[in-house]
Structures are given as C-alpha cells and as structure tokens.
Figure: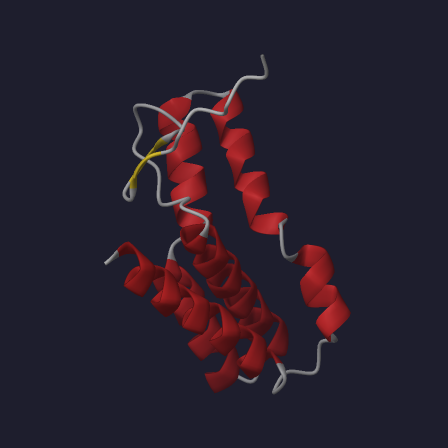
Length: 121
C-alpha cells in the first residue's frame, strides 16, 4: 500500500511539472524556488503548534490546487505558478515520507513518525 501511495504522489509531482509547461515562467525558476515552501518551518522557532500550522498551510494540496485554478481562471500566471510549486513540492515531500505535521512534535506526521537518523559509531 505504501508503494502505491508513493506512486500516486509521483504522478502528482510529474503532473505539476507537466502543467508548468503551460505557464510563462521558466522551468529553472521552478527548480530554484522548489524548496521555498520549507521556509514555513521557521514557525517552529516560535513553538511546535505555530510551526505545524505554518508548515501545514504551505504543504496543503487543497491550497495548492485552489491557487492554481484561481491563477488560471483569473489569468494570473504567478498565482498558478505558486500553486504548482506548492503542489509539486508537497507531492515530493510525501514520496519521501514527510507528511502534514501534528502540533505535538515535528517528526509526528499524518503518515506516521519520521525515523530517527542513524548514528555513526
């Protein structure tokens, strides 16, 4: 099941790349800004509740889709671009196991707990 969900996320990631071709912004800009949604983690400087809220807003696919649709409908390419950026970034995060955050701990996501890093011996 986990692999099936990762495949679904991979298709969403590639959908974002495909739809990007219909916008006037260059692909290199997408690549440069791809990690920008992770700046939302700065909310964790305040506390875990604020951090989780900031992170979840920036990684919510519903918001990403709404921005893309609004950008296309109102002919605002930068809004559509932002939606695709959030959508593609969120899809790749989910492939890697990073889900939306619970407010109790950064490593507690809707996909489960993130593993602890392996320590060098």
